[in-house]
Length: 509
Ligand code: NAI
Ligand code: MG
Image (cartoon, rainbow, N blue to C red):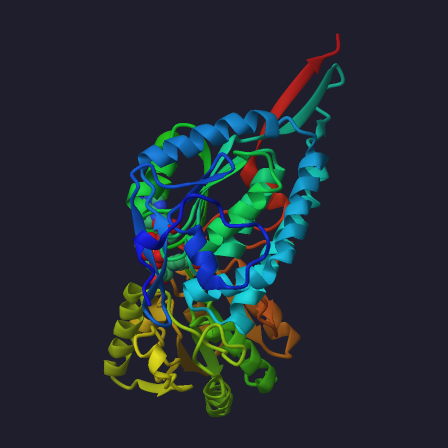
């Protein structure tokens, strides 16, 4: 049953004790931003619906932020930054560590809420994301004492040093596919480095992000970070344009990333952009095929319906092992259970929104119409009547495609992959690099020379051999070409993207 706006209760804030009833929690969080440590409705009083994509029912509302809310959040963050930036770095680190510990206590709650809100299966995706969120805070907490400058041997008559200073207020704009992890990779390093942050959640998934922010607000001084929900042009754009925002970190589409970059250019502020991908997976004929299949299933993020910027959506498989690879891939994906995201038995949930659903379907239809293409539809649609309006899409493995086909060139962000046959090493390398994107790549071989050749020449920011790990704290993450600018998840990324370097020279004479 749809939750109605009239059922919302703004008289109190949801309790901080973990609540594993995601419906109750979604309702209790509805219609608010977090500003100054408090959950507050949008200044306009407007809100937008949050849908459970598995059933199509309204489970909550996001506060519809606009310029007035942005102004309030940024002013508050700017005021809070004065104290936060002056705190001993290790004391800030200790608070961020505390955030990680408290978030650990909420893994089940957050996993269930994000599963309801985004349709990602609890066991395979949502619970995992909630625990990586907590871990990302623990990791970044430890970087606090590394906010060091240098002594520079410039001249014996001068003592020359550099110091790292916070940039001030950071604007963080996040998408809906892995909102918890992606927000953690932005706000934890920004806070540790002495900045305060204003987070703008994606309109498809505002509630779990808000819950995380409410939890963080119980640990951190008020205003250290504020959270707004709302539409991109109405709420995201004024955040980027605000004169007191000194840095933007963004994850999302290439199109929106370029809009953000242009506004930031007008203000001459730095940006980090983590955009899309069309990641190649290259399987050599000597590869351990069973291992490669495991990597293909994880790499393509079938459990996340392929809604991943690093999805291995171009699988280049050597002709000699092509048929075996396809048969085994099909067998594995067929065995995956699609259904209720909150059910422990479920491997695959739903697409996030009707818009993304239509986009994914149109790519599948286009692929089916391509000359020479064969579509293998895997797994099975859920049969429960409850899910008749759910945004479920059967994973599709396309055969007979070339690297020039639309499906191999454009980011689909759905459970759709192309298996492309190859025979010549230099040709497959050229095809893998013939893409607008350059985020991730994997190579599957036991031939050391070939592995070295590929890893050296592949144009991508995150390259793996014989495995397909997802992004982890401590591993530099970010793309080249249209996949973005800047890196995340390491000490260097924190220093480079969330501090300004100042040179100070003392004349000794
Ligand atoms: P989007 O890039 O439009 O949205 C991402 C975030 O940017 C959201 O918070 C949105 O509200 C905000 N935004 C939108 N317009 C803005 C503006 N003018 N100024 C400031 N912020 C703005 O992505 P969308 O529409 O959700 O998805 C479209 C496609 O983008 C997907 O199909 C996928 O291909 C790609 N995408 C890539 C992601 C990645 O992880 N790199 C994540 C999400 C989407
Ligand atoms: Mg958009």
